[in-house]
Image (spheres, rainbow, N blue to C red):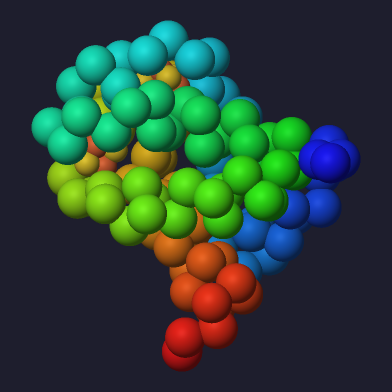
Length: 101
Ligand code: SF4
Ligand code: SF4
């Protein structure tokens, strides 16, 4: 069962950059992604904002598939730093979940 909360977002921000509260779910990022990564940024950001860490772990493959090309970011009407946010999620997965480094 997923419990909504703010702890996950606080943990990410302690270590690194994360801004997504401005995302209003317009879908521009999804439409322009050259990887065809379905609903990636807006879906992930929603999970973070509600504190659904398990869902972020479930989407690990997708998170590491992102090219960090910033096509989405350059066209985001809300100025969300999408690529930096994805980098932060990668840090979380690598260090906190898979403990690789
Ligand atoms: S383009 Fe920006 S505001 Fe629109 S869904 Fe993507 S992250 Fe959210
Ligand atoms: S940065 Fe990632 S999510 Fe954004 S358009 Fe490029 S591949 Fe897609």
